[in-house]
Image (cartoon, rainbow, N blue to C red; front, side, top):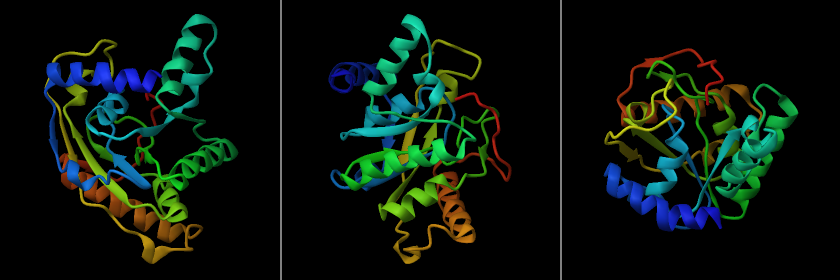
Amino acid sequence: MLYTVMKRVVAPAARAVYRPRVEGLDNVPTTGAVILAPNHLSFIDSIVLPMVIPRRVSFLAKAEYFEGKGLKGALSRGFFGGLGHVPVKRGVGRAARASLDTAKSILDAGGAFAIYPEGTRSLDGRLHRGRTGVARMALESGAPVIPVGIIGTDKVQPVDKKLPRLHRVTIRFGEPLDFSRYAGLHDSLPVLRSVTDEIVYKILDLSGQEYVDSYQTSNAA
């Protein structure tokens, strides 16, 4: 229900106000399993991306959004759960594995799933080294990966601001990446690292960010 309202009411209104530039949308298949791999500059990235894609997209979201108490916690769970987001506990192996399994079940059913290779929001605007969850998801599911470059959302809602501002954003979708050549190698760390780096470098081409070969460790979003 919430997702339908967001798509049919909120998304058209937001597009009219923010007039996002969308490039390469025809690279996103309209049916079948697909993994979207965007850079992450702002909290609103998880809202902007589904806003411009005609099909339903689910995300990994930090578990804190689902664990709050009282009315605020209930509203948060309802919002993120209604959007199809999947909670993940950072740094907790079994919980993270369970979240990836849930994501895989969505892909196995022919759905679209988005995951930020950086693992968290960039605090300095640069593109950081990717974590290998996106590679493992791609190799285990066999789904193609669409790299995505998001530009300008850090101006709409900077890290230290709670309310969005008016600023035009650009979303660039790259060509699908096929990793079927690595089928069966999802437990090989060198392969996972290679696949992750390939995805991140494609994102870099699309976003035009400066790259830094270190992880973003903040728990900002």
